[in-house]
Amino acid sequence: MINLPTMVRDETAEPQRLESRSLPRQRALGGFLVRRYRWGLSRWAKILLSILMLAFGMIVLLGAFPYLAVTDRVSADVLVVEGWVHPYAIQAGVEEFKMGSYQRIFTTGGPVVGKGGYINDYQTSASVGADLLEHAGVPAELVQMVPSHVIGRDRTYSSAVALREWLRDHDLQPHAINIVTEGAHARRTRLLFQRALGPNVAVGVISIPSPDFDAKRWWYYSEGVEDVIEEGIGYLYAIFLFRMEETPKPKFSLNASK
Image (cartoon, rainbow, N blue to C red; front, side, top):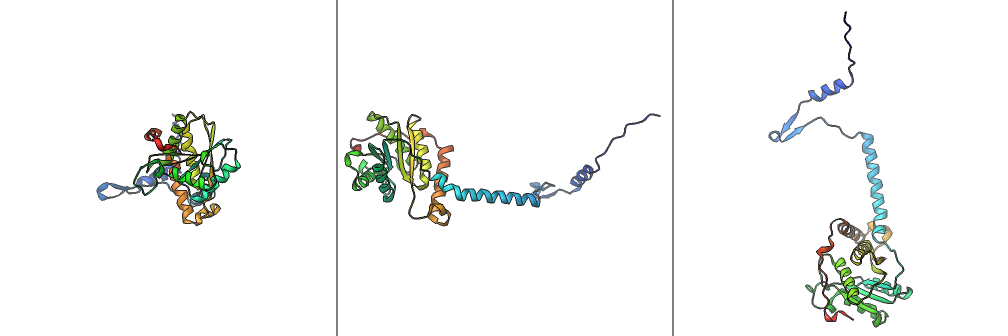
């Protein structure tokens, strides 16, 4: 008698396969939609996923604004103030200039909003910022406006390029600069100025908080929520989508010096 080998059957897997095959496929919209057997999250998996999402939300609430509104000074003798900032930030720039060992202060910025585009260098945010600095007590001979002619998109990078070209045209090569800006715009400002100026210039940034809302509870205020969302999207765009060659080099007019 010949002994035939016996096969061990998986008694648990077979009913599952039969069950999945026995379920009728329900079709709709002429066969475009088909209902099939599928796996889903268990109750405990859903609870765990909810906890993880809640923890991520808390991290965003507590860390988003401090991350974007970074203050990170470097040792520098050149201070840059973005000319579009509010008067309280201008005043903070004046105090920074007096307290630090700065030799020169620059203001940057493009055409004033509402003018319809570039008209002349004196109707730019750079010129407005320079005037405010002088009125606040900074000696005029230490203030230099560097206007950009770009309005609309990529204004921060255009201002950084304008500063780079002005420094080159005047044979100045600072080893480091600090930039005064507002709130959550700080991290994007540092990133774009660093890209424009290159690796040979250390770029520090000083974020001046807005008096309109408590930065530690920014999510309670519409201004804070708007600031974080707008600057967060802008920062991601600057990292992943922005291309430096898209912004042309500025051409300075004869009245670019102040």
